[in-house]
Length: 277
Image 1 (tube, rainbow, N blue to C red):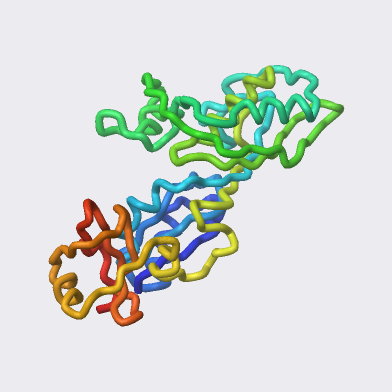
Image 2 (image 1 turned 135 degrees about the vertical axis):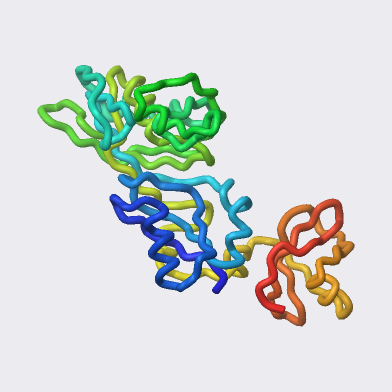
């Protein structure tokens, strides 16, 4: 079986828990995923099956969309609801206009320092492992981009804003926990991400949940290449083919039948995935 199934990850499950379920359901070991979600998060988790796992590098770079809830007044060591309180600050009076203004200030490119509670490796050790040992090390800032951000709703108690729910469309590598902390700081207090739901990864959305998408469907936006009579055998044997197509991935066909995915570089087409020969 080859394709992509979009899972709506359950709260409390790790991304690997979801992979384990798919392996069992489809009786296959060749399974991967795009974009890890923390156990406390829910939402879109595209899982690659069979030959589709070879597309992971291409699909990993897609932008993502989230709906996040920011709880104000407290800071957690993990940046989310699973941590311990390390700081408490009063919350100033905040108008809806002020909150929208602060959210909008994060639009565009900026540098973000990854959190200690992340899976980034430093000298062969994951940052969250060091954090659990009580260690904190210097991290290099990474460029991220916020394409769109909008306020969804505000939760108040006694005219004080306690929680802010917002939607954000961002580049790969953006940590929403850090974004929440930065937003809270700009609002004059502290805060943490209390809930997170991923609603989109590239073209994969919650509407695609539990559908098995074929490789052909997933790559429908790519150029096509129709093999000539003498080219099928060459391609199957790994022989490269001269072409005038632009660099990138292409869908390959033989007599209108989808064969697989190829990659063009410097006018040379080579096989990447063969699903039907």
